[in-house]
Length: 166
Ligand SMILES: [Fe+2]
Image 1 (cartoon, rainbow, N blue to C red):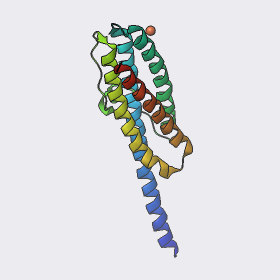
Image 2: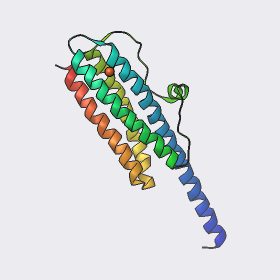
Image 3: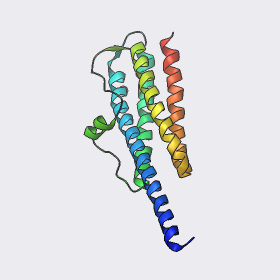
Image 4: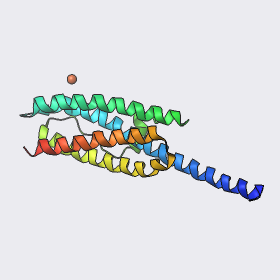
């Protein structure tokens, strides 16, 4: 292989790596946006839940928003490790996020469980897509971060579905 050919090939590889990295950062930013929307939404439900399931859901939403806060910090710091700036404004989160905010009004615990199961399923599907491109990086820390997110979402989808059927 002559030098010119070799340079062209490594140039192509670099371009591919760069495009892959952009897609990963975009996916992480979408995840960051949804986690921030979820953080606010969980507080909303923590405050506004009423009825028979109040004590369960009031406590559960606090546990969840504390875990979500830890997770979005890890996601944002991972974006920094790649040399990019994470989205860091409510405006950008609402623009990029795929889950919706909830109005501030009284809500029963079963409805909360329904909404959270749907949102978590949406977020899980997006993480599964991100996971598919992340494996090519061989960055085990990225893959671990995504796996932790998927485990958190899977577990809480199960819990919300179990709760609402009682
Ligand atoms: Fe509280």
